[in-house]
Length: 333
Image 1 (cartoon, rainbow, N blue to C red):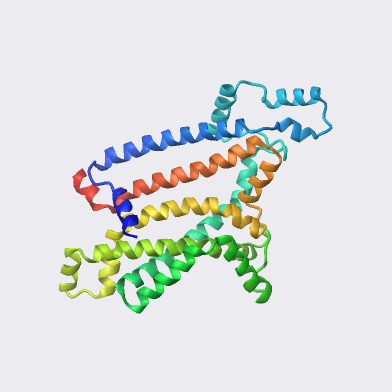
Image 2: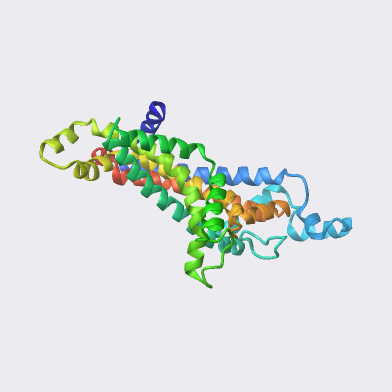
């Protein structure tokens, strides 16, 4: 834990002004997006197989495969195909899925209606649980409450979310029958049932992430509690609750925010496994089907979306540093 905290402290910016800091982060953001697109395109381009062969079937003649390859642009040079793909992304045109015969952007938008709310629900639960448990443990340092929270969080870290998801299904869907074991009715048909269908998946995702974030929160809060301004606030007669929520939490939030950004990005990708456990029609099931159908454009679109989500979240976290880190404001003044 000491090593984790040392690494997190290195992530906190302390020298540059806000403007220079954000400009550097934006340049890194753009460069990382371009690098990710090159890696994704190159990695999927060298995979064996041909989308035209998959679409036409094993009985297709070489002439028909060649004709469809030309129609799909698979016979064009890699550089040209990459530039066309990038240009299409700038206009929200990711091409046509060869297995669904539907625009890739339309397919992704339909599945995001499940994956995005699931990730937001899981992150909300993660944040509420982790902040409450982390503050509670830090305020009772070395006491029974602290030891209990750390023990529970250690168990939470060790439990795989897909295994915990199966336990939730057995208890709340099979035994108690409070929730469905899987499936998604759709937001248009029944919003309440659609929300209930995401509760168990969100809980299974949030438990592991909350366990990690609670430990980070505890360490950050304990470090701030040793500062002089905390003793001054207590000397002025502020209650323990007021000191924790008004002064300690904000100053401890920079390393916590770092982990929250990484966790939200991880939740978006972790939904791929959980969605298959609960048979949710999200991006997770879609990418599995696209890979089995050798639908390169669809796989590229989904993987690029996931990579861009991670990069954007990290950029947003960097921007939030300028808001909550007082040292940046001091240097900018």
